[in-house]
Each structure stands twice: as structure tokens, then as C-alpha cells.
Image (cartoon, rainbow, N blue to C red; front, top):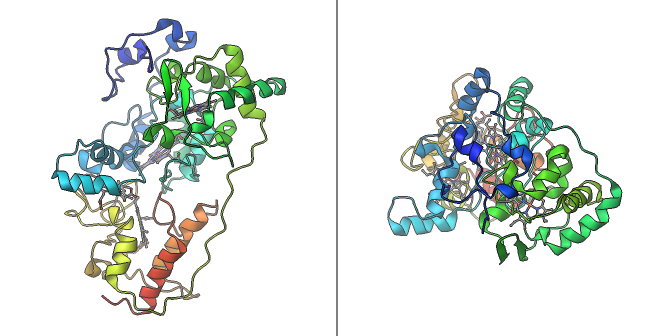
Amino acid sequence: MVSRVRILPWIVLGFVAACSSASEDVASDKIAPSAIAVKPAPAMSEEAIALIKRFECNRCHEGENFGVAPPDKQCVGCHRQILDGNYEAKPELVAKWRSNIHSLPVAPSLISIGKKLRQSWVRSQLLHPVDQRPGLEATMPRLAMSDAEAGIFGQALVPQEAPEEVFSKQAAAQGATLFEKFSCGSCHSFGASKAGGGEFSAGSRATAKPSRDELALAPDLFLTRDRFQSGRLVEWLMNPQSIDPHTLMPNFGFSRAQATSLAAYLWHHHAQPRPVSEIPGRLPALEREVRWDEVFTKVFKTVCWHCHSSKELALGDGGPGNTGGLGFPAKGLDFSSYQAIRSGSLGKDGKRRSIFVKDASGTSLLVRHLLARQLEERGQESPDVRGMPLGFPSLSAEQVQLVESWIAQGRPQ
Ligand code: HEC
Ligand code: HEC
Ligand code: HEC
Ligand code: HEC
């Protein structure tokens, strides 16, 4: 009964994840030969390690040389503790929090990324992140990173790709049959065909519904041709744990021929991309009165507040949008109270200015950031306005309308 194969070289190298149980046996017959001959990864450059620190990648990801962020900074770590019931606080509070946390329950581990993803894909996700996992609301945040820095990360995370492999079109039909038979779509979207809540059966694991983390972490297979190293795909499909011992992708026990046909299907199937919805139009200002309480409850407190807050409320620092973090200097922007939001934010000159200043079209700075996020989600980035909420789904037309109406009415308390 081996559902998650443990591989000795990892332990020798010292990468023992906190959640792993070291007592499971190694099923040596299931490990692909190349996994046994794991070479120690080339040492990461000092430059890369300094960048990891500066951008605080470890607030969301685990990775080689990432170190561990302090508990009050671990966005994903803290959310997981709460969701799993391990956070020490009043049970009523934890229960309330648990029901409110949905966007960032988990993030992909970057520990084995060098044996999976293409260097070019990693670079592109650092500069121009796209939504890769339909089951995970959060995306990679758009950081203030230069091309050169993204290049250093690409080199550090994926030092060497496996040689390209070419898949024959003929094998794709058998791959399509296997894809259906093993219900790959129970976890994965494949472009426009959405992941369904179906059941699957794999290796030692009996028929089961996918877990929360499996659904969140399964990438859209439409992107796999661009993401994944072709020379690793067959090995991955035969035994994912031989490439990444902790991956949640189940081992289906496919033969080389079956895995090759699945790879051929993923490569050659003309899937339609996930449909892009229209940019939500701006709704006219509301006639009725809109007060602070309503905007706070329906907008600022649902998401903004978690990065733009006070130390006391955020259970840590004031968040990256207030006291700085994720490579950004402090902006001093706090959405946790009416008074705080009135004091604005720090401009490039270090002086405070209002976030309600209007541009030539009459749109406030605050609203421009909200609209920028709607565009970023559709692949259109503005060079000087970073979309907000950073790395989270854009606000709905109704939420933007509420903010605009409140501003238009003179921001009543
Ligand atoms: C606030 C949380 C957060 C921070 C900080 C963060 N990331 Fe991410 N990152 C994510 C999330 C969430 C995803 C998954 C996005 C998706 O699948 O759509 C992701 C995806 C990635 C991916 C793609 C991996 C894969 O398997 O798809 C890479 C590479 C990556 N991040 C690298 C980094 C690096 C390097 C840093 C530091 C410079 C960093 N991230 C900082 C949240 C974060
Ligand atoms: C010390 C624990 C802790 C840390 C660290 C933490 N959070 Fe949270 N987060 C929470 C709690 C608790 C809630 C639920 C609060 C509530 O019920 O209002 C939450 C909720 C959220 C929400 C709104 C709910 C949702 O799922 O959409 C977002 C967004 C969020 N956090 C983002 C972040 C980001 C980004 C970071 C890192 C920069 C972070 N959090 C760090 C504890 C934490
Ligand atoms: C129980 C859920 C689940 C099922 C069922 C499942 N997968 Fe996965 N799969 C995952 C997860 C989770 C990942 C992400 C693993 C990671 O990055 O560590 C993944 C990753 C992959 C990847 C890598 C894609 C990329 O772009 O990085 C491929 C290819 C893949 N799966 C193919 C399949 C195929 C083919 C099937 C059916 C035979 C299948 N999966 C069934 C959960 C699942
Ligand atoms: C994941 C953390 C995060 C979340 C969530 C978030 N922000 Fe931000 N926000 C930041 C960071 C970091 C900056 C600084 C960015 C920079 O310097 O380019 C920022 C900057 C801003 C600015 C620009 C301030 C200025 O003076 O230039 C505005 C306005 C803003 N955020 C509004 C919001 C609103 C409104 C929300 C909720 C809808 C939100 N943010 C959610 C992290 C976040």
C-alpha cells in the first residue's frame, strides 16, 4: 500500500518536509532509474539566495534554500494552521476564521520544480503571472521584479532542463481513452473543459473524491505544453513521486507505453483555452447613500485589509501594503479604519498623499488600482499601476461601484 513513495536521496540531502512520515517503506520497484541517481542540485548562487530573502518567497512557498519565514509572516503557513485546526487561539475565533479563509489555502511547493517546469515558464510567471490553477483563487502576485532578477530566479530554480522529447500524434487517441477512463478531469481542467467533482481511482488508492489541496494544486493541463519539460513528462505520468516525492498527483501505475500515449494526448489535443470573460463594465454611481461601514464590510475587510492593516489586527506586521514586504517598500496604506484610510499613502517622494486624488478622467488613484487588476487578469498590465488586490481575484463590478459611489458622495463615515 504505497500511496506516497518516499525516496532515500531526499532524506540524505536533508529535505525532510515537516508533514512527512518517515516510516513508510521505499517501494524501490516503483522508482524510475533516473530518480535513484539523483545528483545533488548545483549550489544556488549567493545572488539568488539574497533575492529570495528580499522578495520573501518563503511567505507562500517552500523551496530549496528558501528558509522558513517567521510564523507571523507565513501567509500560507498561517492559513493552513487555521484550516487544519492547529492554530492556537480561542476555538470560536478559529472556527470563524476557518470559514472565511478560501483564497490561499495552499501554494505549490518549489522544491522539485527544477525537474518539472521549463526555465522560460518560471521566468514568465515571475514577470507576468497568469492563473494556472483554476481551483486556486490566488495567483502568483505581480512583484516589482526586473528581467535580470527573473533570469537569476529561473537559473536558480531550473538549473538544467531535460532534453526535449517529441510525441507522436498517432498515440494521442489511446491517450484520450486513458484520460477518460482514469477521470483525470476529476482534478484537472483542460482548457475550456472544467475540472469536475468526479471520482477517480489510482494505484493503491481506491476510488475517491479529490481533496481540497488536490483540486487547488492541479494545474490547467492546457498550459502543460508551455509549463512542463517534455523530456520529463513520461516519467512524471509513470510515477510522479519519482520526480517530486511530496507531490499530490496520484501514481496511476501506468506503463511507459500508456504514459507516452497520455503525453501525446496532452501535447496534440486541440483543446480550447479557458474562456476569458468580458471586462466587467463600470456601473453608474448608486443613488442611495453609501457609508463607510458598508464599503469596509463588503470590500476593504474581505480582502484589502489582509495586506494593508495595523499590526494589532493583522496578527503580525501591518502587511506588505502598509509596512512593506514581498520586495515592496512601505506604502503606509492602512484599510483597517476610517481614520487610517484618510491619511493616504506614501508617494515615491516619501510624502503622504491621498489615495482619492483624481486623474484627468476623474478616476481616483484607488479605483485605478482596482480596474488595473481586472485588466491584469486578462493579460493587460499597466506599467505604472499595479492591480489590487495583489495576487487575488479582481473585485466585482458591484464592489467597484460601491467604492466609487462612496467616494462620489464625499466618503461619509
Ligand atoms: C503571497 C504569496 C506568494 C509569494 C510571496 C510568492 N508566490 Fe509564487 N506563487 C503563489 C501562488 C498562489 C502560485 C500558484 C499560482 C497559480 O497556480 O495560478 C505561485 C506560483 C509560483 C510559481 C509557479 C510554480 C508552479 O508549480 O506553478 C513559481 C515558479 C513561483 N510562484 C515562484 C515564486 C518566487 C520565486 C517567489 C519570490 C520571488 C514567489 N513565488 C513568491 C504565491 C506566492
Ligand atoms: C498569523 C496568521 C496569518 C498570516 C501570517 C496571514 N494571514 Fe491571511 N488570514 C488570516 C486569518 C485569521 C484570516 C481570516 C480573518 C477573518 O475571518 O476575517 C485570513 C484571511 C485572509 C484573506 C481573506 C480571506 C480569503 O481567503 O480570501 C486574505 C486575502 C488573506 N488572508 C491574505 C493573506 C496574505 C496575502 C498574507 C501574507 C502577506 C496573509 N494573509 C497572512 C491569518 C493570517
Ligand atoms: C486527485 C487529483 C488528480 C488526478 C485524479 C490527476 N491529477 Fe494530475 N496533478 C494533480 C496535482 C495536484 C498536480 C500538481 C502536482 C505538482 O505540481 O506537484 C498534477 C499535475 C499533473 C501534471 C503536470 C502538469 C503541469 O503543467 O505541471 C500532469 C501532466 C498531470 N497531472 C496529468 C494527469 C493525468 C494525465 C491524469 C489522469 C491519468 C491526472 N493528472 C490525474 C492532481 C491530479
Ligand atoms: C497581497 C497583498 C495585498 C493585497 C491583498 C492588497 N494589496 Fe494593495 N498593495 C500591496 C502592496 C505590496 C502595495 C505596494 C505596491 C507598490 O509599491 O507597487 C500596494 C499598493 C496599493 C495601492 C497604491 C498605493 C500608492 O500610494 O501607490 C492601493 C491604492 C492599494 N494597494 C489598494 C488596495 C485595495 C483597495 C485592496 C483590496 C481590494 C488591496 N490593495 C489589496 C499589497 C496588497
